[in-house]
Length: 454
Image (cartoon, rainbow, N blue to C red):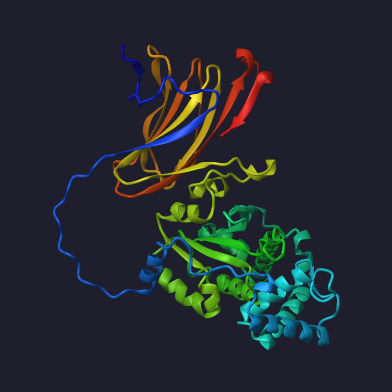
């Protein structure tokens, strides 16, 4: 006899599978689009700067390849430049023997490998021109002393309302780099803008806070050959006020480029609008060619797909199509997630198999930019049991973040999460993770529950 059904369509399942532990599988099905008459090919047009940059958004990564900090891997000319810079620093009357930067002593030899990492950053920023690197380093040390950068982490600068909103470090990329996010949309509020940037003194205090956030991220680096020695920066340009922030942006760019060389492995721009060509022309004079080679450009609507190439979804904030919330890192590393892709005209069925009787399963799922149909149901193993609609099918708006849901099973079976993208031509990426609470000896008391992560 066919299995009964409540609410939604059934999905194929195996009644003979081993249910000792849960696992997942993904089934994809296609819905072809109706063919449309071919249109005449558009006339070729001249590419603008922004068009060229938008095409770069299709690259899996930027053109920049992170350099080695092992001295043994350097070219002979680079080794020579490093030794010359060390000699120049040792003989200098402008730098004392206790000079240090980011907790690394530059001259006393207690940690020569870490000192080499710092010195190589300055050399690379000046294309291994020893004299230029020396001048940059001396000026940067003087700036740090005058600015009070070494002790800035202890300061209370009064920008609590901007923490976690404008500029913040959140999670790590796939290679272990800390990720710093920037989004200045809040400054469209004129009252807030005046409160933060209303005069020269306010601007100076904001720059101190911006340096403080960067120094906080640098604290997560280890300055060791082969270690994590740089950050990832993600800048969201959506609705960013242009004219209002031009002065502030130039100040920040100049300050960071002069005093924080080679601190960024990738600079990812997301939600890049049409006017980026104008912004880019403004930024260009303040950027070296090496810095520009680290850029990754992602137009509006591609933010999640771009970020997934560099960062795992459990480390990406929920507003960007990830699963991470501000307080997730307080309890240790985030729970790992599984990724999936649903092409335009297709739907994906994610089957969470091996759900046992009496178990409670909780899941989180997200799709970048949503605008798809989502549903969830429980399909029991027993032939005469009913399929249960857990989450009825509905269209998920682009503004929604993570969907969280749960189900307590009275019998063994599978959970099926369906993401239907058949109404769109655009490929979308998403992620999910789930937790199973099992009862020992079919006892539902909370002290007998085991938490199992998949």
